[in-house]
Image 1 (cartoon, helix red, strand yellow):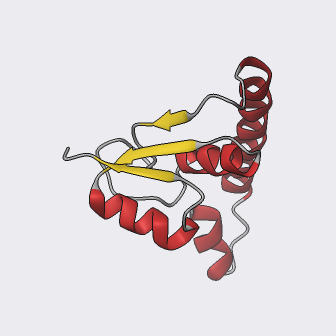
Image 2 (cartoon, rainbow, N blue to C red; image 1 turned 90 degrees about the vertical axis):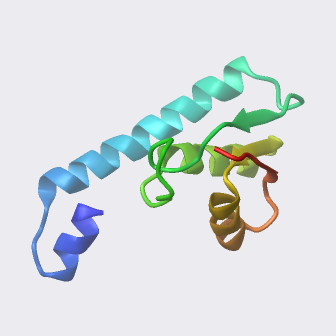
Length: 104
């Protein structure tokens, strides 16, 4: 997020870009390990997909990116989230996930 803002105002935020690249590489690593250790036949549940469990922010959410990558690989992904978060995720990703509302 900082790198995008910095680009918008003409600053080359090298450390932020490096951090973003590192996070993307780590996410790909996690995906490969998960695929080796978990059957595609078993559904994968996420108790939250926001940036942090108590927030409603989806930007920069590694959980949501991981869920999306799993769905793209053919895993059945179930998202257990608050109704407002489900509404936002569904608006962005449609029905690639199964959604279950939770009250907290």
